[in-house]
Length: 556
Image 1 (cartoon, rainbow, N blue to C red):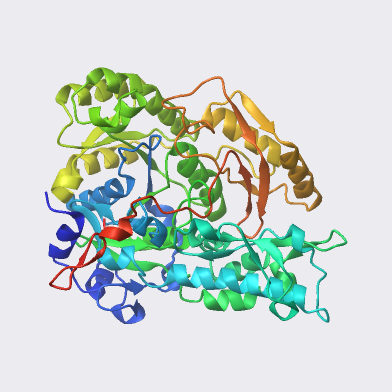
Image 2: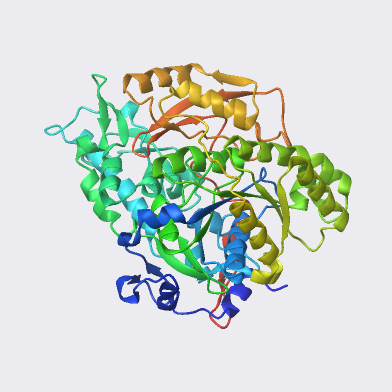
């Protein structure tokens, strides 16, 4: 089998103007970034057309070292839908450079279900992440400048500032730093640090904003900290929102590219799913729904993180109404949840698959909780046996959910025809009755407890002293109507990453709650969540470079 980058390089890529024409976009109205990338003006969003189009969410079972392939599945499904005569677009998040040069790799799909130009998408693309980085760091500079400038000072207490600088690279040495050293001319010394750009609230805001005006309002609503006399300080108090919005003037427009078979693909925004909402922008999703009849999109990690946030945060914020949900699983991943070791993944063993089914069962249960009957699909590997696949097929019959094998990784759109037909049949049966899990009017503690007990399966929630203090602060600021974006491990339904399959009899521990008032949610933190990842002992960067023919190698 050829590598992903070899397959991508051999594809017959079309000029992006031709892809725009497929969506009835005037080629003269797009902003070109070379021959194969472009930005779509926000004026193409059509709220009436959105109501008629079909939105399909792709989620997954709990992540494992084997990988599940949500992006590959999303791309394959969109390609399959076009193959059977539907007008479909896939709408995805942008990759972060940190994982690309670290261990996870890019986010352009795999095999014969990829978006292209793969190298550009996985590297600097159209500069959106750079713009987010600059807007974030401008606010940081304005904060420290205000502390330094006694004449115009807001009297900010440096000890209360939670806002950090960001960069789009894994660099653990920047997690905790001291700034302002070297004398009074260099500022006021204080402890701070760096997050990775995808973890910035600015990224979350970009992906939840409805238009440029809303973006500016949300940026102004960013909570910075308190003054020495305990008054809250927001970015608008520093008059930061105008300049930050100007830096994001191009980044707010969604990016148009294509799949290997020239299916339109919109890629925009990239917030992390175990810290932020983990979905592409509302603007991108609405643009896709305005320009096509079917939109396939994904949410980060599994249903307990990405899908829950997609439904409760993104859909409530953007007024979106998904009509179908796909849960991606692999035989290998189910074996892992059933107790198999990595070296046993390729060995046929239906018993391991059966033992891993409780994890899939919980994710099916979660989707039904939102009023959507999910479709379970297996992202197929050559080592999957007929007996192993039948275990999952029989399980889905018992659960009364559709089951289909997706072979788009190996066969492209041809391998997704059955998949596409299954999804269309599910949509046409009108089984979806989507509803969010909670109402925004509920208090924060009730929202957190509801998610933990219903979606994670916890017995309850325990709030540490710091979290209780944070709840009081949120209440005093009048922010109880914000959504809840729980940050926890993606590797377990619980907050303990070592608990596989479907844990029971556990309590979720919330140690603190951060305020992301610009994004419109609070972030309860459970366990140790890294906002600035580190590189592995052997980073992917070591294998990336050019070959003798000046082709990039090592990206995946």
